[in-house]
Length: 181
Image 1: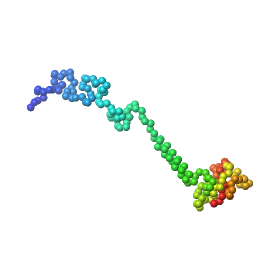
Image 2: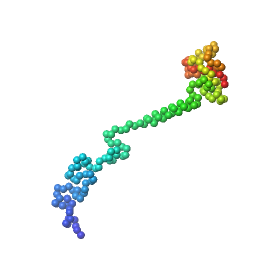
Image 3: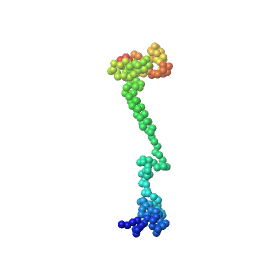
Image 4: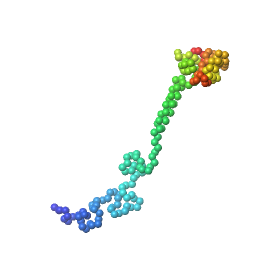
């Protein structure tokens, strides 16, 4: 059996012939690093392996950006705006489908209030009036005067009632010349 210090090579701190050498006897530097006291080759990094383009730096989670790289703009508002636009399109289509909007000649109406009417199917029991034509826009009171003096709906035949549709009676509204259904 041999004992330490008898005949074999000794670590530098125990071997007097190795004075002035670093204490890393028997170890090799990591891959890509020069031996102690040597300079790295020209163009090489002094330690580690070069980072591959498109990969995060060592220690960063995937998807993280290195310091100094511009951040991509966040578009959190895009789904919100898209949702609002889609909602408006659906509501507009639904309003048209359910009879919203201004009535046209040939449409049938149901009275909701004295100045509000809803377009309904002419074959339904709800239909009260059928639009035969229109007159010029006027206020509610002007229409009352025009009906009293027989000057309402002068260009429309077969009408029996003049309907005024508007928001405020003292402002112009649309006049529809209609017949009973």
